[in-house]
Image (tube, rainbow, N blue to C red; front, side, top):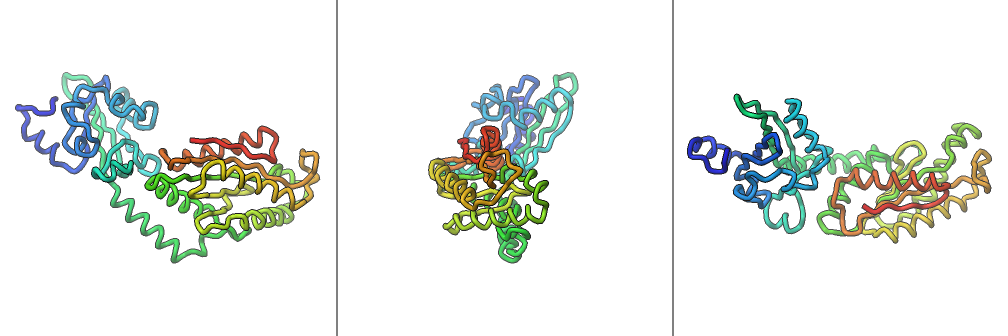
Length: 320
């Protein structure tokens, strides 16, 4: 099947006028169909795409979820729907030239469907829909709900922002940082040997410890856009917009010192000073995020794990 086919002009006309991207791959991942929508939003003309390997056109998708979906379709005859929540903008597709220059990809919904053609090898159809308008509506509704129900965004025990508030804030700040190219840092921290603390002193005293630590750390975020949130259990998160990695590291060290300076006894701690301490993992994107939000969260979480593995009461960082 070619870009311009005299035998099927009606089919080609239909494919070129539908408002979704349509790509057909053969069993070798070579492009055999590439419609006008794809040319318009990818900047790759049909003549340039036909007979090219799909993963040569989009090399960053090798080994990703879309790669697996294509393999499932071609080898196992299984269709796939890529979750828009986890795969918001997998392909470098842009609504217009201005957004392309800003690097602002359109939000995408992708389906991969096996095509069983008589007397031919199996092919697969990739359909891409622009869901940016729907995402914008969802974001506006989410922000309106946040304004109307701000009381639901606070943690009951500590009074700081809760997990829901964190999820909204990190998504908003990542989108803003991606749009402006500004730095964004994230801290993930937790209280060292907190299970041992609970077991030794009891859960009521454990709650008091959480309250004391969160109250001390919450006062260190002075800018309105900074967010200190309880992520879950004894784990907290700090969102720092417009903050490069080195600045975030300096703040994290001060936070460790602040908690150590509370002099909360912790007889069950394995640390020699027997005080409550915290470990912090820092992740930063100094030139604006280039990937998904969960990649930044995972990086900060891995840095936290490294801090705990290296002895606790310390700060470790990971750039993405």
